[in-house]
Amino acid sequence: MLKKRDFQECHVLYDLMTHPDVFPFVRQKAYSYDEFVFITKQTIEAEEREELISRTILDEWGAPIGTINLFDIQENAGFIGTWLGKPYHGKGYNKLAKDAFFDELFYQYGIETIFMRIRKENIRSQKAAEKLPYVIQANESRKNIYDQLNANGAVYHLYEIPKDLYTLHVLRNNTNEVQEASHLMEA
View 1: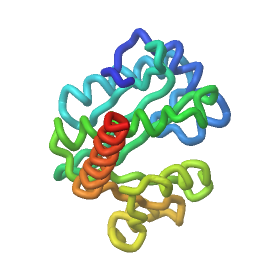
View 2: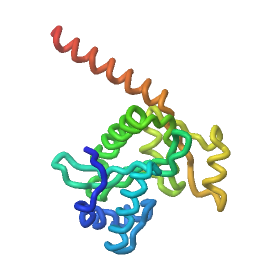
View 3: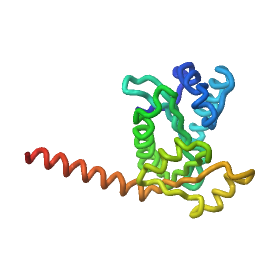
View 4: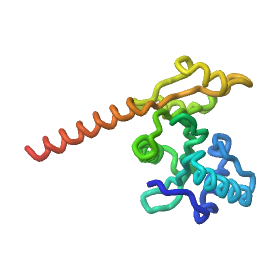
């Protein structure tokens, strides 16, 4: 589902990223293929310096369909940025990618808090974030960060994913799955 970024998927990802329903919401915009390759190179180098964590999202056949990143890592916290190509919207890939990425961030990299900034006009992403039981709307609770994001005008909503709330969600779901499997075995 996720793999470290490399240059082999640049053509496919660039084509997916430039779709008008995707491009406005991509953090690392590239206006040409060459610029996309350059940004990919910078991303790989920044990960080597532990400044960010970036993965390519793959479909079930191993084809690249988007990216998921943790930017601005400081004090075991960072901002998530993710996008999927238009043909993959609404098919469950976003949730699968986030679950895999959150597991990696929280349990392999020791990240404690993941922030999401979502443009106020991006209703689709807001609704997706608010569906997740471990996401907290943080405009008020993290007012200093919210104010920094919106220093030039109210552009973003701020959401927070704390490791403990995510872990509780995972434990509850795994317990439910074990109970369901146990119940099926008894039947």
